[in-house]
Image 1 (cartoon, rainbow, N blue to C red):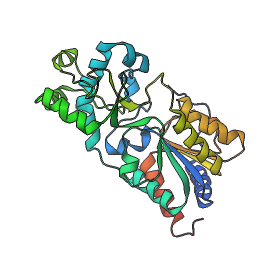
Image 2: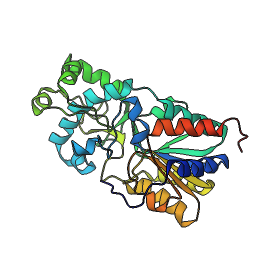
Image 3: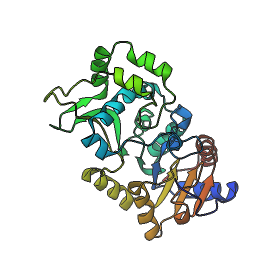
Image 4: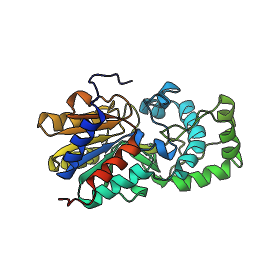
Length: 293
């Protein structure tokens, strides 16, 4: 959990600083789970965040513990269907608009929900992957998550609906909290190529490294950007926080809009502690019809 390390500024001061930063353009935006809470997907580390209720799966567990994989897929079969139905909210849409207008030099998200892409943001670097594909850890075959879902539905008729009624909550990594009795009723399917049950969502789990090509894409965006805007992220994970460190070391301005403390706060010039969607809507109004670079 991230604790306060720098005082947030008064709203009007932080808001004005971030507005001026955006007006100059070439701002790299990094988003986290706080952007998607208004789409019904909870965050990790906020007051109602999922880390208060459950510990996320680690890559080591996925690789070496068949029982943990089975538990994940029972929960993920139910949770992904709810995440898949989520719609982009105004925050996703505004960031996509700012990108198309040239205010943002690029968009990097730590989220795996695909909602930036659904809102029309292009390109988006999915730092931690997304939930739309599945990879076999045995043979490397990839399969669309929708295809896997259809196969799981055939193997578990009626399970998703009944289990969702018994589930406690949907988590931002695409699963739900289920009682062990539901896990035991679940039937897993196998890889279409090699027959292994060693299937994993194509996302970066805790303890797993970000792929090299994705790191290179991030480095390219950082090099091409004049400032950084962090939106809805505590930046607790080093793959995201490293971006803030690099920008700070080269004396480029940083703004943070988040509902709670962020690890980037001590590096930030502007710290706006507030709700994400209303903040972006206010900024968009203030930016108005001014010419963009």
